[in-house]
Image (cartoon, helix red, strand yellow):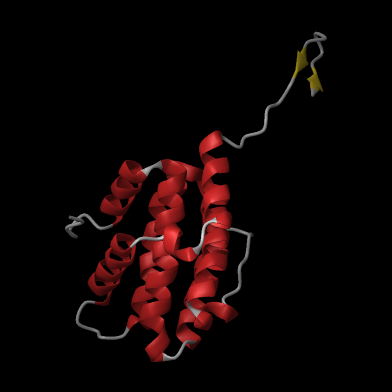
Length: 167
């Protein structure tokens, strides 16, 4: 509650919307299988393959996927929204991909999140990189889709990768 000079009382409502509450509840209560779908796993695998190109190593490609995804999400949900989606998704993804166990979950900024992702994927064994990137990316896509809706999530991803056919 805030009292202005004119004596008016303003009540500040919480910023959390029902859709955010639903997304958080779903993501925290739902078992992994219901949180992500095969479609989301396939989508992130396609994006990773696109970023990899002919290089054949996902260590550099995986962080680029998250950089691009987050850059397009910031205008929609804000810096803190992206950090929150990442943090919750990383917790869920760690349950599915144990190699993500060492990934630092920071709430400082999107830049700090991207730096932690880059550092973590650089240190991962080559055999774990693809699986962990796909699992983490699918968890982010799933939670984002619950938060802002499927149509807007697809638009965000399409803006980041306009040359990739998402069908």
